[in-house]
Image 1: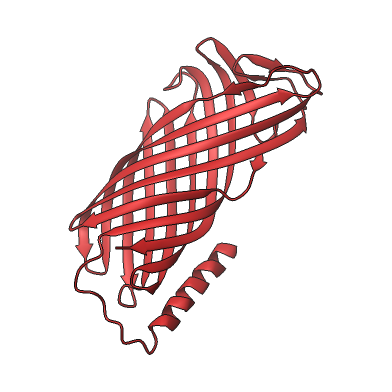
Image 2: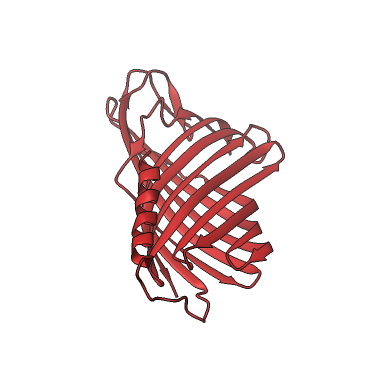
Length: 262
């Protein structure tokens, strides 16, 4: 509901700016778009099994109670020319939690007993590079094939407050191919834009997918507002790409930001 209100407000402001205006679209196409935004991510993950001889058994929500800390700032840069498009993006999120354990858990080979009070922190950094080929390309809309890669680096640290000890940490990194389709459309002489995408990939029993949409409303040809929503899931069973480790993660994020075209 909150996201819908943001989109409606953006569209209303852009439409108001257009009424009575004598502005006409520039003859030179604006090929670059830079955006900054703040999001509100929700991420839950479950890890069990072993890798490199170190066992893990932990659920970041049920066991550690990790919750979002603040509203992280992220950024992206897009370039489009003819039938081709490129995008690079950077995002980081922080989480913290403190909970009395309801069961024995393991984190990177270190055990924590049921009943212990554990304080935990986590940081997730996401880097993405994406290429788009537009196989349907019209002046006010296109549909394209996305090919790229996304790297997720997590840093999870836990401290046992009941039995004083040095904090233990785990820093796994996942590199995920991105394959899928995306679409774009514009209206009101280019002052309104909408984007959507769906990515899916499977390999050796592991699967992951992502989807998202965003709306952009430009108060001026070069400056505008953006509201967005993304969600995804990663399922990597034991015996696939991570050896004996079974990893599951669900994530979603919504937010708003500023965009600049040039």
